[in-house]
View 1 (cartoon, rainbow, N blue to C red):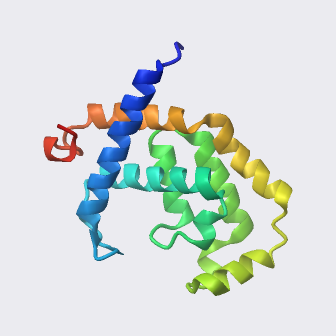
View 2 (cartoon, helix red, strand yellow):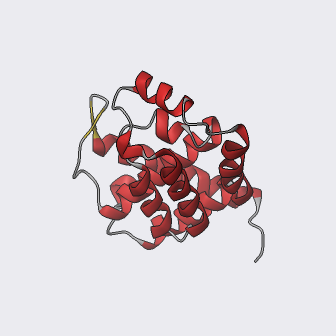
Length: 161
């Protein structure tokens, strides 16, 4: 497969970032998530972009400690729906190790619980490496293609002019 040009990478990243922002505008009411505001494909795209950004900035444990809108299995399913099987499996592996449904809904208590789970630095790096080896640009390239192929999920009002 031919590598995309820097210009194409920027165009894909800009498109995905813009659409992600539009999804956020349609799904939030004063920083509270509102269900039903997005087409199912757009919702999954939003979940994947949010998770990808958070993982690349803060590591995969961020999905457990800080992300309150989506559970790990829903996030894994969203990745899987776009063909990111390896990434989805890494999130499912994290869910098996952490047991997210059993964690506190209080962020500080959840952090304390995760700290007490003997989740080693090596474990953390191994799961992060699955994402880092795949690459953020590759994820955005696929998502940009999805946006272009699904006008029913991403109408012109959600696209840059």
